[in-house]
Image (cartoon, rainbow, N blue to C red):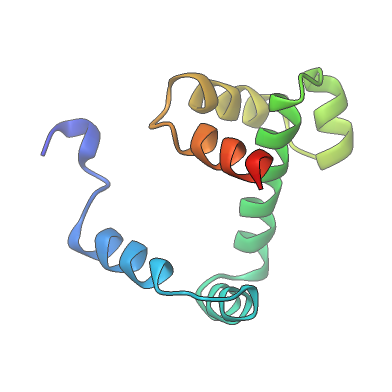
Length: 98
């Protein structure tokens, strides 16, 4: 494991394995509501909204106005979208294809 992979722990792997076993949106609703605080859920949803809006080519100011995200957060998400692990791109492409 490299320093960049230090977030990959037995605990994160177990969490991702559990998520992969969810079969329906209702199951995901129940699991994530038990797992996360309302603030954490809102933050995750906001980040996903920012990624989708960035992918649509919206300007940072417009994204901030729509989502309430700071420009620092938007910049960070834009960086992850371009240079991250590829997770945002994978899901944006899958959602667009469905």
